[in-house]
Image (cartoon, rainbow, N blue to C red; front, side, top):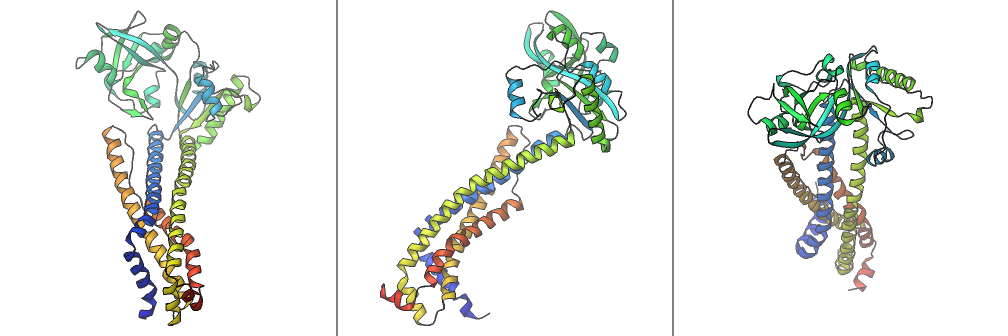
Length: 418
């Protein structure tokens, strides 16, 4: 390749290295912008992977039926706010779960509700989370594994038996390293016999399952909470490929049982694991795009700074431009020189921002891991290409106008301004 093709690059590089303070200030805006883009992209991917992984951990063959305020959608703020403010939906029952259990593609079902109560054992007292379920809970949720003992039976569930299966954390609180099976804890003045202890499971979807105490749902309803409704029904399918058909069957069954003719009046929502993953993926994807757009504003600010620096540079170097044109430099070579200056600055700033973003991503990943959050933070090729792409675009967009101005100066006009 002819050496003259490198002349614009040599002039651009010389100018950048000569005016180091100006170059550093122009770099700073791009560094901050690309750094923000890389960190936001990595965090967005990490949170998305974490949430989808948590949902998937429950299994791909599950369907969840939950209570919902009529005329709202399950994921709407109206439904969430209404329930948070105390709106009670009392139409979902254990009988609904028993009816769902008779559908063709249903392998197992349990109706459930959650409450709190102070439990005591000897001199130890603590308010614990009570998880009322049916006897099929371990069949539906394969992550529930016994350390010792057993789960309650259908007969115990229907007879309001006062039995309990403890999460590992609750067991340690009351019994330490001793054997809990066969002992009893006291709830609301009544003895509940411990018949099983679960293996440690950890937190899933921000719920600490190890702190739960499982008791028969009807026992929790009648003897502790004084209600006759449940909050949800969990369903395990025989054939996950028939997910849509099974969801439709459950919806039709519950509308018939609840005397609902208008779908807008549904007091329940039916969601499969796959559908929940898609919903979360869409929501988190949209949120990531929004955050990326907001952080990109800093790149625009950095680009404006570069454009101002380039305009100043053109004004200061009019005599140089005129002299170069007088000895044969073309407008194209002048344009290339100034455009290369902008690109070198923005790409250098982009690479620095990428490196800083990568380092912070690794640090944040280690910090989250130290607190027990398995957030999969990592620097991806997507983050690298976004950083390079954004910095290149900023150089081209904001360097083009000053470069054109320099290229369009005539030798006489440039020399006259000297």
